[in-house]
Amino acid sequence: MTHQFQFNYFNPTRLLFGPEAMSALAVLVPKQARVLLMYGSGSIRRNGAYDEVMAALSGHALVEFAGVEPNPSLETLDRAVALVRQEQLDFILAVGGGSVVDGAKYVACAAGYAGDGWDIVSGRQPVTEALPVGAVITLAATGSESNGGAVVTSLARQQKKAFFAEAIRPRFAVLKPQYLVSLPDRQLANGLVDAFVHACEQYLTYPVDALVQDGHAEAVMRALRLLAERYDERRSLGWLQNLMWAANQALCGILGVGVPQDWATHRIAVELTALYGIDHGRTLSILQPRLLRETIEAKRAKLEQLGRRVFDLVDPCAEDVIDAIETMYRRLGMPLSLDDAGVTDGEAAATILAALRAHGLDAFGGHAGIDAAMTARMIRRICWPA
Image (cartoon, rainbow, N blue to C red):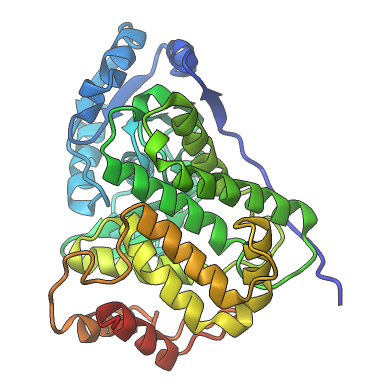
């Protein structure tokens, strides 16, 4: 039976890409806007983004909020919400990577909500309106600059959750690859893996004869694979601009329109970050190959298609393709187990499985029929890979 595509795709985010992308910022942010400028630990001062933003918005009313951490916490972001209310701000500008953009999205909708902000993150409070958000991207990974999703962590609850709303899509995003030059190698590798797994989650299910969607996803994943092979060129502009654009395309929403998707890797990976503080990209490299081995029969056809079209393998079996993915991750210096990531907790498997059960994620289901036994095997293998 032919799979029938059905989707409603609209992406209103204006993307400005390239060395002159910042030149439009003063026009993109309304002159009368009262702006909250959100950023992280201060790297935007080293890469020049801060000075360029301040110059572009010199005529605007602007209040700064620094210190948005990787995997932004509700506790930090609620301080920004209070600042928006206190200063009567009405536009949020995120300057940084996906964590800062996600944080800005949360602040944009929480500022108008009188209840507990976790209601928004957990889905108990639907989001129908939000303050406008703009983004200046200095780290390529999540594609958050042009999608309607955000991920927030509650430190008190030890939970990390994603929420989605059309109202939080950024109005615009500035993508200037030169900002990536000063990033540490670890962040470049994390970003590449994050983008690759984003594309995989929309592709590695089963064949539905989606020629355009498959082709687009394969182009993105092939580009990322080539960037991994050319990792020694990572300080070149050519390498960086390809990473920035691939990361955007991997999660702007276009790859998965009308086709089956499987976000099990991401849904389970959030528990590793919440429990052990592991970088998001590194949780994915730890979990994805093991999850693929557990679901190999359900994904065999698409894995072998991936092997042919992305990794240039001749007549591959699915096991070969997973090996190729692991080889790519090793080339980037990414971990494939909790031990590789420096987690020495002897009770890790029990702790992770308890968290998954508590959050209803131990039997994920999906097209591959992930049950509690499969999840337990996978978690044990990332804890004790030998």
